[in-house]
Length: 377
Image (cartoon, rainbow, N blue to C red):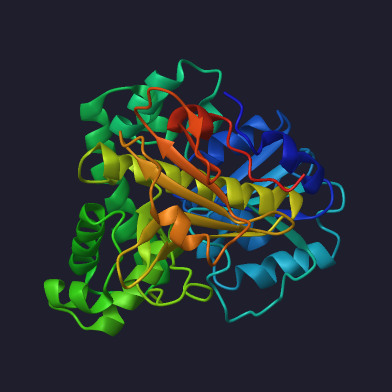
C-alpha cells in the first residue's frame, strides 16, 4: 500500500536533504525503497556499510541515496553539512532516516539549518488504511495488533505479541543505550508497563516515582527519553485559558496501539490521540500548518479528552465515548473559555448521528477518523 507521505515528500527531496523520523520498524526502509527504483541504501548499524560513511564512498549514480540510522554516528550533522556544502549531493537526492528523533543531539546547534526538511512517519491508522478493507475490520485489527506494518499485515495475535516484546527490547537495550548513558534499563521497562496501564489518565511524576522507587527527576528524564525514541507522546493540559485548569499533569499515549493495557475505551482513546497527533504532524511537515494538541480538565474534574488549537480556524474540542450517546455536559463549561470552538463527540457504538441545540456534533467515531481533516484550507 502507498503511505500518506509518499506523494508529498517527493518535491522536497528535489530541493534539500530530507530527514525522515519515526518509531523503530514503522516502515522507514520500505517507504524509502518505494520512492524510486534507482536507490542506494546504507545503514550505519550494518558493519559492511561503515566504510561508506568513513570514506564517503557511496554509489553516486543512483537517483536517491538513503542513510539509515545516521544519528548514531558521532557528529553526523557536521558530516552531512560538510558534504552538502561541498556539493556532494548536487546531482542526487538524499534521505536520512532514523528510529529516534533526529533533533535530539543539541551539541551541534543549528549546523544543518537551511539545508534540510524533516518529516515524521507514523504507524498505520484508519485514515491511511481507508480503501484497504471495511473500516470495522481495520479498527478491530488495529486494536488487536497495533498499527506497525509488520504485525498488522501478519495478522496473527501470537506473532504480534512476540514482535512487541522484541521491539521494545531493541529500543531499550540497543537504540537508547547507543545514545544515552543509562544504566537502569529495567526501571525504564517498568515505566513503560505503568504507562501502558494508565493511558488516558493524567500522569503524576511524584506518584510514579513513588510506585517505582525512583526520584522524580529520574522519572521525568525517562519520560523524555521515551518520547525521543517514539515509544510514547504526551498530551499536556490546556491550562492557560481555563480557569482552575490543571497545569502540570500530562497524559501519555503510545505510538504502538497494541501496547495499551485495558478495555476497549482506553484503546479507542489512544487510537483517537494517535490519529490527531499523526494528522497534526502531517499538516505541519507537508503544508507548514501548525496546530497543537491538548486536553482540557479542571480541578473539579470537568474534562474534555482533546483540544486541538488551529491557526485560522476555531479550536476543536473532541470527547471520545464507547457507547454514551448523550453529549457531554462538559462541552458547555469549556465553551466559556473557547466560545467559537467546534465541538465533536466521537462515539464508537452510535445508533444515529445528531447535533444538539448547543451545536455539539455527536458522530460515529470510525467514519470520522477515516476521513479526518484538520487542515485550514
